[in-house]
Length: 291
Image (tube, rainbow, N blue to C red):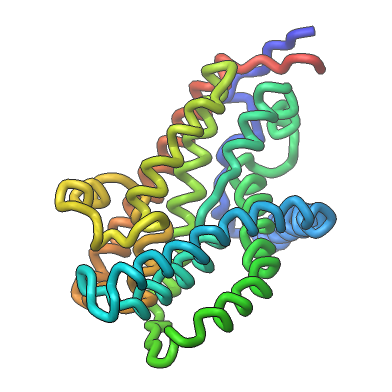
């Protein structure tokens, strides 16, 4: 059975405004947010084994790349990076990316394809709100599951960490939160493509190459050729995990931080608007199958 869903103008579950002036309404909204977060946090704990598998795959980069670059440096410097700098960079990137980088488009695309997406349209909470706290629950749980491995990495690389200085000021925490929001809104906007095409997985696969290349997760941005460094300024990938990582390890001059934060805010607004537009237009194409 195929059911055509109502127009987006009649849907209460779309991008509902968070702003409200009534205290009781604020309390009800906060309770909804907490309920969604708690449900999916418990779900993540229940299926933590699968999460640990993904974490171990991410460890490959943290284990191999610092050793490769440390060996290449041979006690010297490569683009201003010493062997110790490479180790600190990759460890910081791994921990930050575990919180910042969102992959929720896979779940959303599957739910759209199988008709489960229809439940979003009748829930007493906006789609963006529900998806955000659903995603946030795992993004907070994942670093917690990863932390024991991180401690082991710190022990393994203890010889490179004798003189580590990290920037834990407000600009880092602001960039970290904004980076998470950039990643979240960008992948949500991308997931809305599943409303227009039957199989969006191939599109999502294409996302990972530029993301790894331009975000700094594969290589520090400073090691990229000039043309690639220029690309990091016009795509959102660097402003997810790359920017907070470089701020943390002191690779960004203080005078450049305001511009980075402004760029992150710009990508959040642009991605959120794109998600809203694609949501509204995509609902006209969406059909719930198998209900």
